[in-house]
Image 1 (cartoon, rainbow, N blue to C red):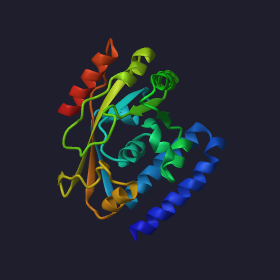
Image 2: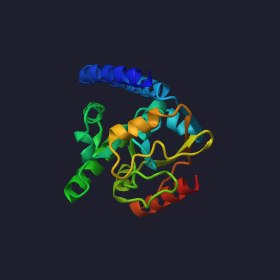
Image 3: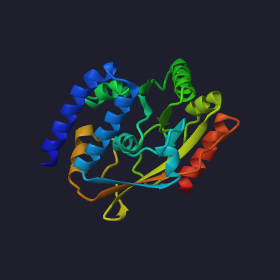
Length: 233
């Protein structure tokens, strides 16, 4: 039954996404948050927010930095507060989800091109200065969630240029109250395989630990602070 509801939910998102360019920003954000919450409800995933939750829920502007475990991370964060994500360019080619990511305004990054990194830094800075929130996963890839991989510092420059805050967030997935790798999207796993693994459980909980916002003098300083905050979170 979950598969049926998931298919219907995705179809509804595709129809809504067609109209997104015609919608005001407030309505788009409302629909994104509603859709993400409904998706997690269908998948039987419970979200628990801890720590400095007000920073994530209120109308602050910042660069959100999180560890990366799954494609679910995006929907978990959007269910709390819709934000703009930076994703690797490969995601734009994913069936269905790539199309939706484009419609949601995702900033795609070709990491192998220095000129593209500069373009993305400028785009992120512009979004933060305009009062928005941009989320990045500085590990550069997803992990199984047992440990946080080393951070890449490049995109932290956007927060320095915008003179903005960095908000560190630690995501932890559990099943029956203990660590689980069931949601991890890693290695040679396909998106379909990952979705099937998530559908096989009714007892997944994700803890969203929101830590104190950070400021720094350099991107390296901010990167180190964020890594320490998330690994200790």
